[in-house]
Length: 467
Image (cartoon, rainbow, N blue to C red; front, side, top):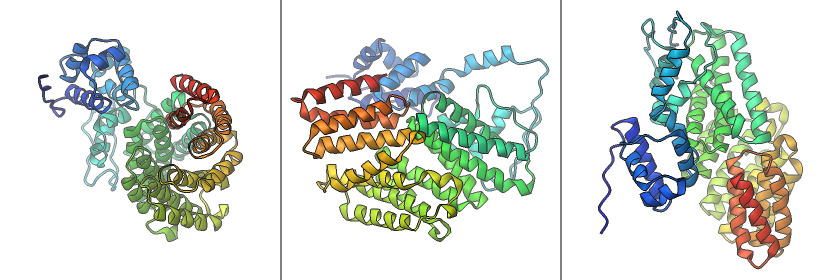
């Protein structure tokens, strides 16, 4: 009889937290023994056990291999810097710091997002600590403490001004536009992820900086917009804790600024993320929150949020409510007037609406034995309507259409053709979501093992996802 594993104490230290997180993922993915996991990442089982017990150090390279083996979405790699990398980082920063550099404390603005009654930090306090304190007092620390440390302590931070000027607001808007464009075209991984991460660090750092009252709402709105696009990019890269932090920051800023349009957009993304990670009930709650005071939203925004509701109901396999929500989304979209929409809603066009609603109908067709025809037609509209600027959306709709035909159609060879078209687009992306949809397509193709073309498609999918 195997001896029981030592009970871990994740609250004792960052290393203990890291070890507990590793054990949680190991059991979730197997469960695997220490030796099983060690073999997957080319280390001994005893080292895995020691890391879990916080008696051994984990290298960054090993953290990356563990994330890949356990399919965590990068949790351990993101946590590594704070848990194991701080001593080395401090030494390097000390060696490279210019002599005589003085840190200037900042005045914390008295507002809901920063907490009431905050005072100026003592003279000489590091700016990184000021930023950490800002987020801790805003209530965000309860979401993901490990990731928040990364959020507020960049390795090479942008210059923090002594006072907010229109220039900083223009830079925030420009950063949001660039990240939004790059994310849609290439996905949220790779260089886009690094750009997004640095941008949200800098944006959060600006909030405690003294700001003239006339500029304060615009600053908050600009940080909210940046939080939305960064959160969306992190969601696409499966940096889910990071994305939740960015979205919560966006929601707080939008609400304090009285920006109902940005608030609605934030809750729409929050809903989609929770639905994607397997919590449609929470996703539905976020979508309903976004619809609060829907009279203040444009028809396009209402369509966007009803679509999120439909996707939640679809995951729950609730046929009646899914179809009702799709109908409400369609009715709202029929009233859509781009002139009434904020600029960032331009992406939600005819193709986007049909692709989003198709996802809800896909779940009914595959899992609730409903007619796949309506979902297929909507995916086809999305594929035809998305240009290269929205390559990721096109690739995802192509992949879902191929999966639908492979799972529910009578012509798997046509599904193979659709799958190869999707792979042509996906090969240019760094999107974890697109990769997950390809894995789903491979599983459906596995039902046709006697079809050589389906086997070839599965092999190409495996090579693409691995790359």
